[in-house]
Length: 386
Image (cartoon, rainbow, N blue to C red; front, side, top):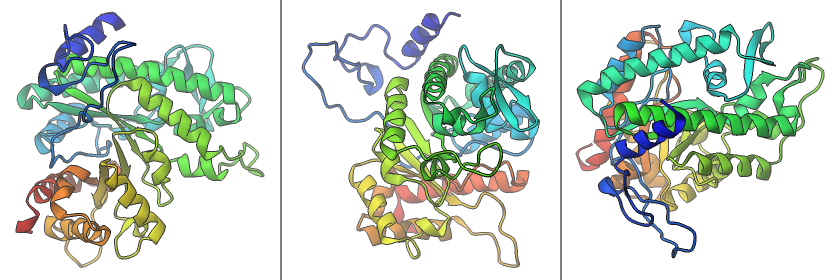
């Protein structure tokens, strides 16, 4: 199937086939008006209230088992499971590199490096992705979700973790950064179109940016280890992310699970949501700094949801029993109370998730963590019972 055919199939799956510009298509999707038409201000297209989802990764290597588990636990907003235990090409950077168009990377002792043509590692990443989509397609036949989320490393994290031929990071070359960004966008657009066409679901893209705080702070080491890569100015970072969000033409979540996640920067890109690790003291109502709470309040005031990572990514140790849904919900309610938001608004302003990926968890805790996130979504819909 050509890219154009895949896009047409995706539009049909989303209920947009045959729709005229500036009309509302079946299912409430808005068609972008042609130039010269009066501007419209539609409500953002968004997943249903009370949705919960995963961050991405799971333990194990069985794609079909992972897809069945995810679609069984998250029937409103399931995600494409990532299984980094499978090795090269299944890790965050390898998966993103496998999406690149007209660019390729190879594995060297220091990590991933740009190469002249696709090799074994690229083919492996592509094959793994195809198998993951086959498993997801099969699992979705049973649940028929209206929404699906896919994940990829964001442009800044990708540029920070791939080397040029010289051994320096892509991040050190502004031209290479732009080229990687454009290539990633093109690959993601094709990926989204294929997922939509195969499943009939609307697709959300989550861009993972764990390296973003280091990019902004100039904290990434050079190859020698004696220096650091120059910091990238915040306006430049935000403009690039905004360009990606706009170019993808689907709802985009910007996810950063670091304590120093730049919330205002991420929210100012036009993203549909921002994802954080809410188990960190930096984001807890009782311990967060006033500036962080102000940023969360501003994001919610603007109507932008947070993917709140409330469920521990690994089973807590010690003698105390693992937290239950009631205890975890109380933390979210406390945050809403402190910021002056009615608790029932959490159903629209918060999507509960595990704190981060679950690749480091036991299979039992991974399943339990997903169930807890789903129960939190249900609790946000009816907070008076909690």
